[in-house]
Image (cartoon, rainbow, N blue to C red):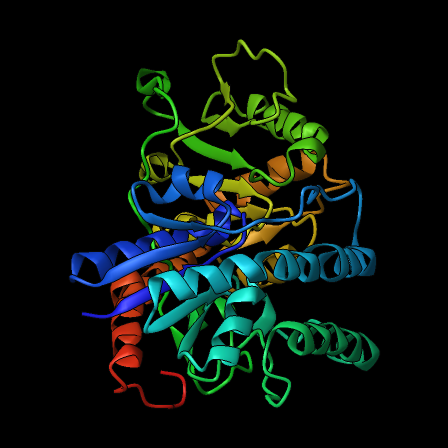
Amino acid sequence: MSRFLFVVPPLVGHINPAVAVAAELSGRGHHVAWAGHPGILVELAGRAEIHACDVPHDLQRPPGLRGMAALHYLWQDFLVPLASTMAPGVERAVAAFRPDVIVADQQALAGALAAERLGIPHATSATTSAEFSAALAGMPKVEEWIGRQLSGLRDAFGDPSRTHDLRFAPDLVLAFTTVALAGDCAVPPQTRFVGPALAHRPDPAPFPWEWLGPGRHTVLISLGTASTGLGGRFLAECAAAVRDRAERVQAVIADPGGVLGEVADPDVLAMPRIPQLALLPRASAVICHAGHNTVAESLLHGVPLVVAPIRDDQPVVAAQVAAAGAGIRVRFGRSDHHTIGAAVDAVLDDPRYRDAAEHVRESFRAAGGAASAATHLEALATGQHEERGRP
């Protein structure tokens, strides 16, 4: 049996797919360990072997960053400091665990750096398809600036003689999406589209299932955990849109920051955390920020979306949803209950959106998810991996 070390950032959306793949590998008899922030890993990975890595003390993004300012922050104030701070812990984890393969999240660059410096086969875990897009096409100075950030990290912690892009392992890139959603994007030939990988998650809190009344559409509304402080106005407009349609629509809202206050409403249920995976089979639509995990999980259940991207990869993912015909994009900062309500009406009433969502769902199921990812990793560990074009 082989030994796999997963290196992950302290981000729920990046850890959850890896947890599913790690569980599949463990179920096949392989040894799995983790390198990352122990607090979040204990919560998400359970009783796993965890090798602690330090992370920067302040990773809170200033509110309101958009566009190039957000990209600058992502690299200069998040990814580069995170890699530098995690690097010693990853080195210790490698020395203690002695992995056959390192599986490094695309935003946990310390894993890729350790793998190339120590000559260990490694795979990239690409939990979002944004890096495969041409979002920076036509902006060569920005691409050059990102290249300098990567070169600086490689000089400090990797192998300066290597020239490949650290975001794409030369051995294997696992993309947790499919072409049906990502579109005909340019990807390295070592990329394997495996679709979403879902792991069992304990319900965060008791849910009042009896609240879901029959005869009405259920709409799930979530802006993820990283945008808690930004969503008050948008969530309130979503709630108003639902109340305008109370005769046929009810909503469950994830409100981790309590920005809606106390909501005593027969049509809107707001909770700090919701059992999203358990609710999706009952959902008719999802309103979200176009976070890749929420989008993928919704489409894996054939549920169409209304997407309101805020920043980072979300505009790219939102554009993919719209291009696939599986949802409607609205503006996060300007949409009111009229705009949001009209989009909800469209995805509920026009069967083309659900048909497109079901088409993506079938592609996800065919891709294999965690089982497919585990098979590719096994091949890499045993030296049977081949470089081939995308499936």
